[in-house]
Image 1 (cartoon, rainbow, N blue to C red):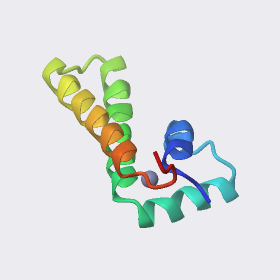
Image 2 (image 1 turned 120 degrees about the vertical axis):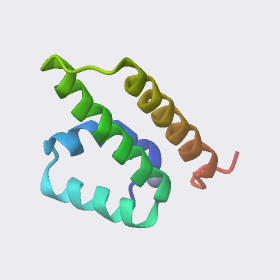
Image 3 (image 1 turned 180 degrees about the vertical axis):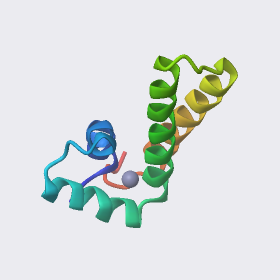
Length: 87
Ligand SMILES: [Zn+2]
């Protein structure tokens, strides 16, 4: 069973399409159940696209900062709602 922290580790590979099929499957299963990780992946994908755009010379610093904040929020939420660790 994939946990939120596992997903965070492989998230960028997932977005890049670099994961083996079975791992991709467990990410998708997790995303179906976990809203925080859906948000996280969505934000990560947005910032990945932004990085591609910025390397093409189209950068909006305000937008970068907003996305950065959202990613951080999503990460914080993921931690607080994760129920795998009784802490
Ligand atoms: Zn999750």
